[in-house]
Each structure stands twice: as C-alpha cells, then as structure tokens.
Length: 88
Image (cartoon, rainbow, N blue to C red; front, side, top):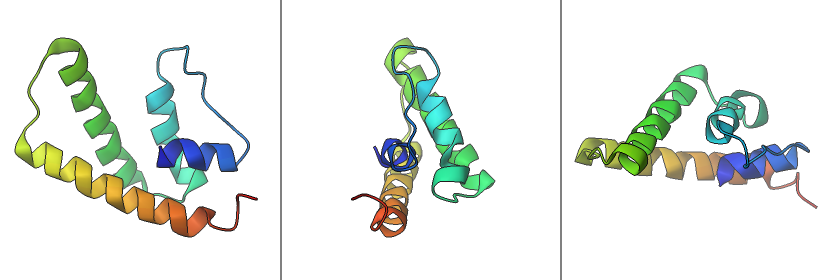
C-alpha cells in the first residue's frame, strides 16, 4: 500500500488488470521514495516468496515473515515521512 501511495502521489498508478503490477510498483520505489536498490531487491524477493505461497502453496519461513513485517514498517514510515506534504 505504501508503494501504491507513493506512485499515486507522483501521478502514476499501475494497471492491476495486467500481470507484473506488484513488481513494477516495487521497482519504482527508487524513484518514488528514494529506496536503495538493495532494499528493492529484498522487497522483490519477499514478493516472489508471497507469490510462491499464494499460487504454489509453498510455506513461508518464520525468518521471511519477520523480514517482511520489518520491511513493511520501514517502508510505511518512509512513505509517511516523504509524502506528508505531497498529498493535498
């Protein structure tokens, strides 16, 4: 949601009816919120794990879950800080 909000604040949105919109939204974080390439790689790896869980039934480890929660909180904090004045 923070990634989508950042895109919207910059006047863009992904086409949710087409495959790959989650990946596109994450990759745009370097431009929309100034997220480092390393963090984008971590978020993309977590996205891939979620997809495997959702579509192939693979289990998610406790470590991956903890990392996902930590990254989500960090991204939310960054989005709030950067976008506070950007949304009328």
